[in-house]
Image (cartoon, rainbow, N blue to C red; front, side, top):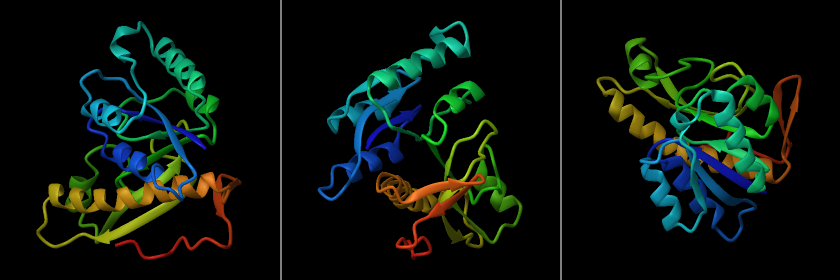
Length: 209
């Protein structure tokens, strides 16, 4: 399966997806990395790992529609069958999301539907949450919404900072995202009534450490 990754920053999840795709038993190929920021450190990382990159700066377009038209054109030319958002800090329009319906994934650093949006770790700590984690989901027009593929949880430790919690959850993200993409590439994921159905042979509740 040909996969494109969209980034805006350092792209640690992007880097992890690329390295996972290069394992001999993997079923995915990262065909391109696109960024809306020319200064995104992840662009250089992707190039060093041998993946084609392109910068499409949103600030150079006169509208969100024209930016997304160029984005779609590049994705289509690259042959993308699945798109992974990895720290892509732009809200995508309903038209774009509909165009890539069930082919657009995101990973969010909370156990959705809790703590949608930004500053998730700080908000989880301030709310007194006992657990937090991450969620891989299909993208829908509403922010941080869509059928959930995979989640991982971890206890929120007493006295830890948002930065410390973020570091631990990022470790979970790096395990969950490649696993979810691999399931899709194997044809083990389907959507019924806006809920993900996993093939019986999968073990979605396995321990992730």
